[in-house]
Each structure stands twice: as structure tokens, then as C-alpha cells.
Length: 314
Image (cartoon, rainbow, N blue to C red; front, top):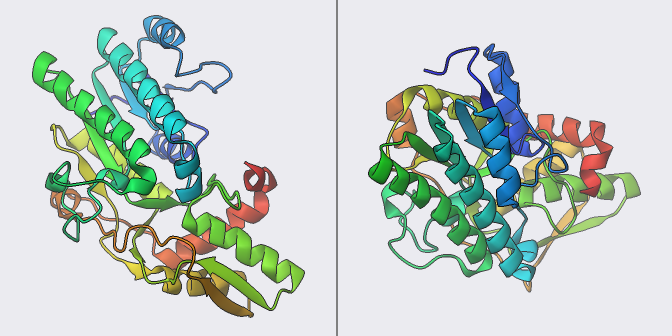
């Protein structure tokens, strides 16, 4: 169990997952949280990361920093996605180990699982077949971070764990029209269509892919829970275990926002993976389940979008 006054470093505290972890730690009365902005500490610079860890020597680390983006962003910057994510996580994990960090948690992504993985996807299907090409660079970087934690545990007896979230959404998301994930992109698109009084909104693909979404505050609750209750080399899936089609999601977003026009589908655009649902039985057996239902979460996200205008420009 993490002591309430233990020094806890949250890397990526301004991102969606990292900021939620900080909120959750505060909610649970952890009182010695340390953070650094990208300007204060560039995690891609090994010398800077080593100096930071040598000085601060955190007891616990949540590694939630990453370079992220949707399908188009991933396809257009393969080398950047791979390099920045890989170097960042190696720097942090290695420096944590060199400076005696008691426990580290690495946040990955469900895109690490094979494109044609069995559904729902168990943790054990990792590296059993080919990855989805559209985000292969990001997936390979995340797999490397997960494996580095596993290998440190095996070679040096560390207690480094990883968690693999499904599609996340919630406060501090990125609502950029082309560089964001599906749910925030839909929120922005329907909001702007409603404001402009547009009769139709065109969405990508045919609406058939099945997806699962987890509210980010639920993820943060699981992250703290795992830090206190789980040790092991295998990752832990973070999700709801429930799925819906992109078409159903789109209709739900339109309903929450109050858009009453027609929804059209551009089938020349890629769908991405046909189905992505995590097997969450491992987290369930450990004693954790999600709390926020999707429609409630979308409502909270829309409030965040309206109240955080800068988020829309990221």
C-alpha cells in the first residue's frame, strides 16, 4: 500500500489520464504528489530525467505521459510516435529503477493487442499475431514499455506493473478536429454543427466498428487501486466490458449535445479495427469495476469541452 505521505510522481499530469490520476490521489488524501510540466522537464532528454530522479527520488511513479493522436495523426508521423514514446518511457522507467523507486505503474493502450485478437481481448493475447497497421508505431512503443517493466521485474526483482486502458474520454481530452480520438472529435463536430445550424454531419467510415469507452476518472480509480493491490508481470486491462457501434455512439453524442440534423457516413474513410473489446475479468477478480455509464460520461465531457475552450485548440 502506498503511504499517504509517500512521494508520488505523476508523469504526464496535464494529459487526460495523468490529470485524472492526480485528482484521484488528491481525493484519496495522498499529500506529496510531485509533477513537472513539459517545459520544466522534457522526458525525452535522458540527462534531464536522470537529474530529476536523482534529486527527487520518488517512492512511486505513475507513467501517464505519451505522445498520442487518432488514426490520421498516427499514420502521418510514424517515426515521431515511435521515437518519442519509446525514449520517454525508457528514460522514466530506467531512472525510476536506478533511483530505488518502490513501485512504478506504466499506462499503455489497448492498441497493443493484435488486429484480429479474440474478442473480448484477454491480457494473454499480447504478441500472438499482427498489430493494426494504422497505429503500429505507437503500439510497438507501448509494448516495449510494458516489456521493459516485465524484464526489470524478472532480472532485478522490481515491482513494476502496467495497465492497458480501452478508449478513454473525459475532462482534459483533446478535441482537435483531425488529431483527436473518435469520441472527443464527435463532441466537437456535433457542437459546431449545432451552433452553425448545419442540416447534416458527415462521419468517417460506415459506423459499424464496435468500441468500448471508459471514463477517465474510472481509469484513475483503477490505477490507484492497482498500485495498492496488484503485483505481476502481466498487464491488467482497464475497461467496462461493454461495447457499442460507432453509429450508436454517434447518435448518443448527437442526443447529448442536442443536434437534430441528419448523420451521413463517408465510406471512403477508414473504419479502423472492426471490433475492440477488452476482457476485464482480471480487474473484476481483483475487486474493481467501473462506475460511470457512457451517456453520463459524455454529458460530463461535453461540459468539460464547453468550459475549457483552449482544449479545443490543442
